[in-house]
Amino acid sequence: MFDSITPETLRAAGSVKWTAFPDTIGMFVAEMDFGVPPVVSECLRARADSGAMGYLPTHVAEDLREATAEYMASSFGWAVEPSSVYLFPDVLAVLRETLRRLVPEGPIVVPTPAYMPFLTLPAEEGRDLIEVPSRVEGGRWVLDYDGIDRALSGGGLFVLCNPWNPVGRVLERDELTAIEEIVARNGATVFSDEIHAPHVFDGTHIPYASLSDRAARHTITATSTSKGWNTPGLKCAQMIVEGPFREAIAAPAGLVERQINTIGVEAATAVYRDSGDWLQAVKAELDQRRRRVTDVINTIPGLSTVTPEGTYIAWIDASDLADRVESPVRLFRDHGVSLTDGAQCGEGYENHLRLIFGTTGPILEEALARMAAAVAGLD
Ligand SMILES: Cc1ncc(COP(=O)(O)O)c(C=O)c1O
Image (cartoon, rainbow, N blue to C red; front, side, top):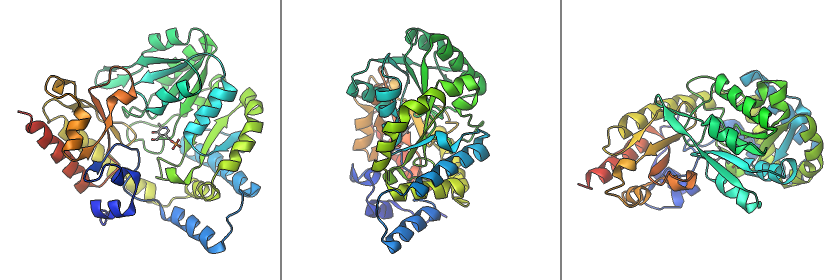
């Protein structure tokens, strides 16, 4: 299905991933090289043909609220009222509005390593950030519950990212329940980013708010089709909230809805309802890639990684190169592979790297060969 994709076709298509650092393989931004499902292209063509480019019609927005609820029920067994779904341009806009309107006080508590904007957005909104470093136990990244408990002791917002960018963990029910206990005990709130839920390989995605009524009432869930179906440029995300948050968000969300792209809304509705066999085909590719990344990275001296259970992101520890390499990200970029600098994912992760493996087998092989050659060239 994806055999015709090459670095040349990708560069010609002109995505940020393939143009920001020319002459390198782009693996620093969470986009996939597999294009979009045919239903998305059909939505764009239909609007282009009709010439109807006006404001977002109410019935189109309502359709997405219903499609989101249907998708959550059929994929994760989570019962959501369509009227609990609010539309935003993107997940970060959901977080921004959460800080402004829903949780205007208290610290923003983020377990690290974290998706980079979670660490910069609080300061932009004049809010205190508390980073809580996580650790590897038995070959898996785990949250530091005591650290999270201490950080939330005066309330505030806990930013949960599950599936977890950048480490690829898919949290289990007992882990989510431990979070729920801590949050409830401290009277805190959860921002649950579940944007990577369509890409789970080991285990099952459990929406945090589906744990219990108590969890649902203290949670703002944010999601989008932008990672699962590769549509971030279409600018349409969903916030799902219950109880008192609905009252607080209704008016501002109404205004924000004016910023959303009608085509993005239609495309999201279409993929939530039926993206054919595209998602399964992509997941089969990613499943091979995640194993291959782990196998090869762990044979490169000085690098190590843990197999991701979800997402298309690998988190690489390059600490053992630290005495020979000033900047691992620069080393690999100079050898033709653009990765994310771990320093952006939290304090203490300077010698780590984030690698996006949402690409074809041959492109991944070339990238890994370049990385191996970069390290071999150090001696
Ligand atoms: C965990 C996570 N949340 C949010 C985003 C950004 O989503 P959006 O473009 O909808 O703001 C990304 C993008 O990579 C992500 O990985």
